[in-house]
Image 1: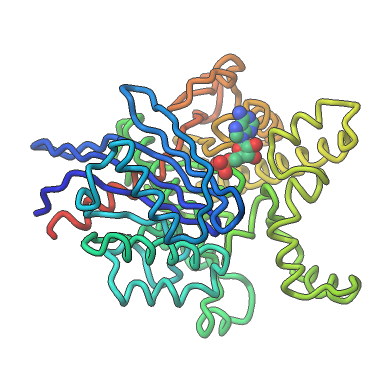
Image 2: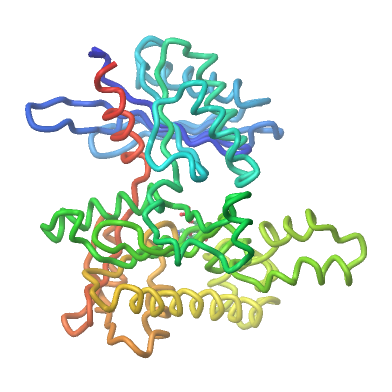
Length: 417
Ligand code: AMP
């Protein structure tokens, strides 16, 4: 049994490391996890990197920000640990013995969280072709913390593993079957850590076991997806082989005709499969249509300002964004045969934009869904019922918390070490 009572949660991206530290209080019944500090290192490898740490102070956080050059993930990990010590979130290096890492793609190899050893690392490594933008930085983050704190035990928590329950007819693409058997081409789905948190929360609020919860959850952030949860399990989701599929996102296209790749390579000078893929990931979605921003706040502001040069484009981007979400909700209501306990909005847009929630609900014509306007506009950000009694099923906005799920899994998997 470990005596140390802290867990560090890491989410490493290509140029950033997000972190949170939790204290574990073990009572007779079940442990509780309290956040002690959180923050991020951003612009790693880019001039003027930024280190931000927020230290828990009662119910509030005190924020400290330092601009310093951070050349790589090892330097980023060093900045995280040094900052945690400096601001007394941890006493010293020895204080951290358990670290949970967010991993995006576990492919078909990982259907649950794993204690990390060499085999797990090589499994995550072998999923790189499936997530070339996400798995390499997460592995870099892992390796940086392994170097820095050699005594720590690590756990990988996958964004894909929640979706391993999706039935075959929903996870297969209608392509030659050998693409699946020989090359693992299938729908994997992402944001599973967020969906697990929402499922836990719904079960508590509805006073039901998780295995009885049926819901449609819209995780609408810069990356966006939607999930049909049936009997507490993922039953369908909009992201696919990679996070590019499904909804229109900040800068990702979502569903397109697969012939577009080939066509663009034929008609656009210098276009390659790689450059078209890059454009579909980084120059499409809200950014592509609005022609000015991938950030919904900017797009909404422009869509409300007749003098904005991208006024019309921004209105169009929002219309397309909303219509696609509405269509998925209807499709998933059909998948769940209308046996739905809740429709949930979560993540940056889902939690914060009453305009988008309102537009989506108004776009759905074949279900009877009704919001209470004052509730929809309410800024309370943890968990709120925002629908009217006449609504066919309740609609909630819920603040997601992926870090607490990573912390719980890390605790549970390392409890006996
Ligand atoms: P995430 O990836 O979950 O951090 O979400 C990022 C997205 O949430 C961006 O498109 C933001 O514009 C959007 N967002 C964050 N806060 C708000 C807000 N108050 N109103 C509208 N959109 C917001």
